[in-house]
Length: 185
Image (cartoon, rainbow, N blue to C red):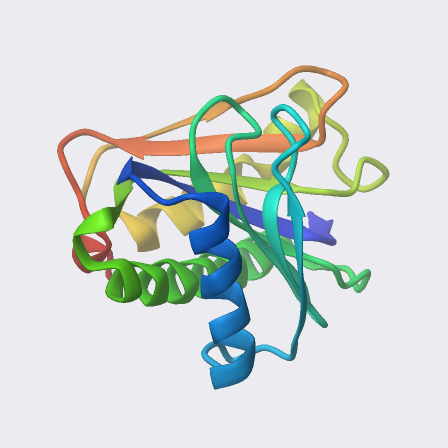
């Protein structure tokens, strides 16, 4: 199955960062060209409950820290409309997400750590991948392919998350404690 606007999310295990810290981080990334993306602007939506948080706008994507689903985390969301195979789109999203997460972790050292044992993959396009059992069934093979690369040799649980009004999302999780350094991707 092909999708557009792939998303990937990783949760933090600890964070004492403020919105001001995050805005500063994203402005530094723009000034230093820290990611392999054309970085454009920073927006702060922390006044919106469970909203998009602090967002870095790039040509290809949005990168943001938020608590949109009740847990603080970092998201990478593709902006491009071109259809591509789901597994390929999610591999790219996970790769770019982990670059951003590792860059943030290095910058904040002991103030920020990520839970590598869980990722949420999704698609911000209800036309091509509406939330529901049909999409989950059609995308299960792609989810399994990505899970086997992110968690090679590990027992990985894949489950749909969210409700019918939301875009398609699925959680990949494995047991144990994993940091970013433990992920091969």
